[in-house]
Length: 397
Image (cartoon, rainbow, N blue to C red; front, top):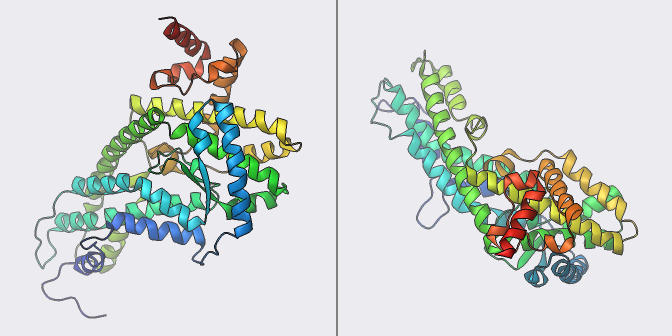
């Protein structure tokens, strides 16, 4: 390695390396490019994926058409019948997810960079350590954020059945991608016959997808995601500033090993993405209530349908519940973005649905998704009678 030039500061070599990775005109922002690279590597294990077998593709698409009609009838949502199933690989699923959350990733990266502040010109003696660290943080924040986002999406892609695993408003509202490899692995692990498994997966995914893609539901999700990111950005910016001040204490710019260790500590993204986020905004609380209602209603509908159509439904139901219980939701998708359902969501949502059915009939559930005003509030999720009373009052006016 060549000697550092006489006019270079202690972090200049690192600035050169990461500066060369900055996006040029027309290319992806570095945060999103890093996310895509990291997610694809994790999702595929770095090995090229084979295309979905034509036979399996045709089977899933055919079952999807039948399940879409059943979903439309069971939910009372006509547009569910128009949802079209397509099959893809893990890498293709990663591309779809990052395409839909790319705006959030770019916005978050820009805000974190701005929160660091502009580094002032530093001198060759490396004396202006704060300016050097600010420059380093501005360079590394998008890279680290991209790596964290990519890591999350890549891990989810390893086991996701399809687009509806994340309650994420999509740009293409009638096309639902299923990850055939993950469905096949799940079926083999639980010894579930393919026709039964395919029908269950298609029905569960289409029901969820049809609800999330309703415009008024998507609005609530987008409002919640936006407010959650504002809260996260504020907390992340505070942690960045705290980290900068903390690591400046007792720092010796002439200590080569100390500089190397400091650069690694400063660029560790875990303290940016994790930790307390502060009070929950009302939009996030409302999104969480709607997320629970979706999980509970879909679970009830799918159970009702497969009991009638699949003799071995109990095994599928057990496998599905175990799948949710045994895997901890990702911090980014479940907490920061709020688009990944949890077992608490399912429990609360199922209790809400059953509470409604204890007091009235199935026709009441069809009102759930009729408009934004009909969506349940957090208080109503805990006390379904409040929602029923509000709907009765609303329809009596």
